[in-house]
Image (cartoon, rainbow, N blue to C red):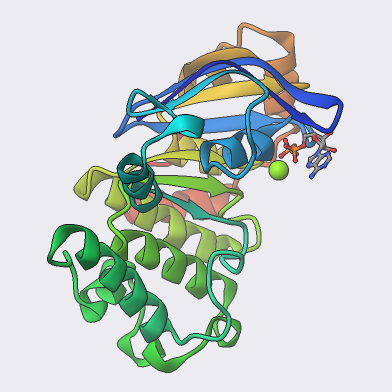
Length: 263
Ligand SMILES: Nc1ncnc2c1ncn2[C@@H]1O[C@H](COP(=O)(O)OP(=O)(O)O)[C@@H](O)[C@H]1O
Ligand SMILES: [Mg+2]
């Protein structure tokens, strides 16, 4: 889906991402971890086309993001959807949940002729009560907004999500529900994603492989479990030891509910 070849990204004269290589397959679940300020959000924004790369190449389905044809760009915009921290940034505050999802479905059917879902089906997919249809984003809880963001991504036909700390604004129990939802969508809808989290439990539960970023450079890339149990780099080990875990009690509840959360 995405390939970054030696990308560099600068804000003004300050280069914050250096020579980063990433390979993100269509159905891959990939984590991006690193200290605050290491460049995680910047890389995510570049993948969304919101920040230009200053060197190297960023390809979406084999085409450079910055010189894409209009047709490819439309396809890119529908395929790749962001889910941000509190689910606010991506949702129009003036619209009801119903309108937000209808708009998404309409955009989708303009592309393909027929939408995949109805609003009711979308709400059911993400486990939201149909009675919330008339609410506007600010009338919802953080967890509900996250679900609406994900439902909207499904409405427009997203095949790939880009998630920046999607659960960090949520209570632990609500985090669990959003994680379960993402796991299920990845398994059932062939959805892939790149996810940033500072919570080790979230990365372990959701990402088969992870990249470790340090001062704008990738220092390690491996299957998440191996990365965390046998880090090759001292930096990764220190990062792991400083990242918060889920409380053990919550982990046990999730495991009892069939959630894949590693020990
Ligand atoms: N809009 C911006 N203008 C200038 N510098 C920025 C901007 N956004 C981020 N930075 C800087 O780029 C670096 C990487 O930031 P960021 O990608 O947000 O890191 P992370 O998400 O890993 O915390 C930091 O040094 C940050 O101060
Ligand atoms: Mg960030």
